[in-house]
Image 1 (cartoon, rainbow, N blue to C red):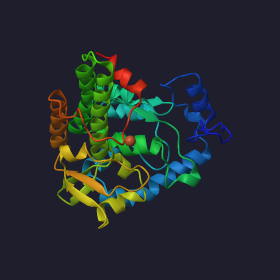
Image 2 (tube, rainbow, N blue to C red):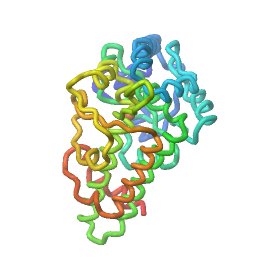
Image 3 (cartoon, protein in one colour):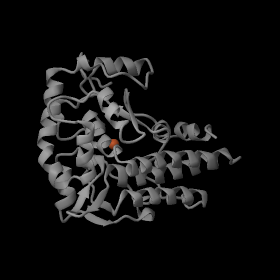
Image 4 (cartoon, rainbow, N blue to C red):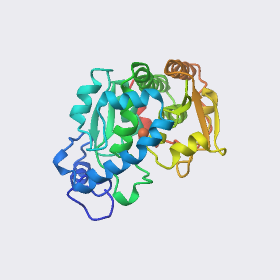
Length: 303
Ligand SMILES: [Fe+2]
């Protein structure tokens, strides 16, 4: 909860309802739809409407299809219940509402169970262009459409299984400090691969390069920049680069990886798991994303 005055609506950072849930330690929450204010609804409509032409031009075909399958539209903030009913017709994924950021362990563990943690709040109208934390426009508008595609859903679930593999491998080490160090290195690699694919990935389509990463698809400023700017490196996906590359969250990405298909993505994540077993993620360069000792211990307790 921010130090701004609490509000009775569902605005990111100030929602009284979400603040209460966080204070009570509730991670999984409901979506009290009646709390969305007129301003929340208007912000959703504005965000959605202005992205529409950009999505048509720069969005991956599977993303555009997925939006239709989920019945998303500009007129109203989606109801998770309805979105899930449609999603269940297409893939095994199910979205559930959360009160805020999860630990990386809880996040990946959810993915491994075909569950996707989803923010339900809407960003404040005045920060429509940039919000450092996810909101429903990013999570439902940006992420969920691709979950309708079974090949993509399988790759996403495989990320979750990678985190379980890291836990399995490291929890058997008797040297606790070394186990922590190693699990942190592995999670750093998994999180970076996730960042450069699920959040900021590009895919080749018959019409040219398109974005499938939700970080791009939910950013009015960055989507066009990512595909058109000469400042951006767009290179064929290489797992070994993606897990070593540092991430700067404070600016538009200057390095993006291109996949040929979601089957390729699934195979790459399988390779990631194998590399962990082979010890190739034991000593990755430091930097983002770094997890705390407490988070590392959550992994070590798993196996
Ligand atoms: Fe995301």
